[in-house]
Image 1 (cartoon, rainbow, N blue to C red):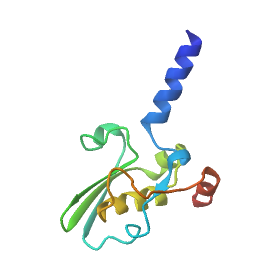
Image 2 (tube, rainbow, N blue to C red):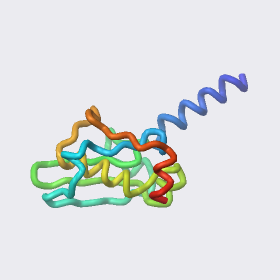
Image 3 (cartoon, rainbow, N blue to C red):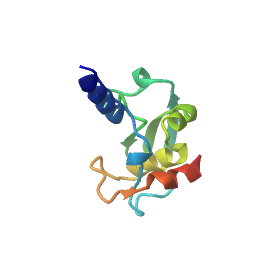
Amino acid sequence: MIKLTTVLLALSIGTAHAGPFDAVLPPAEFDRPYKGRLTIKIVPDDKDMPAGCEHMVGCATPNGTSCVIHLRNDAWIRSERGAPEIVLRHEIGHCNGWGKDHAGARRIPPLEIEKYY
């Protein structure tokens, strides 16, 4: 029973939020400042993320010439061994047209993430 609980806990932690092991930047063509109207909303917890974005660190909703990004706060992102700057660049990439399939993603090795702390 303890072994099964440990496995389930590890799986739930791995899927509930991003950490340095899955930090990705968009391809260079999407990794640029957003030219439209950008709104960034910092949310305290999962219940404040838009539907379909629960359990995510960030979520972008592009809409023509504007984009809304919902982000967890910096302290929470750092507590999960993430880097707020990378999360924001990732979400802006979605605002710039990068697809949800993350095609062409540029993975950041875990040790490289630490220089963003």
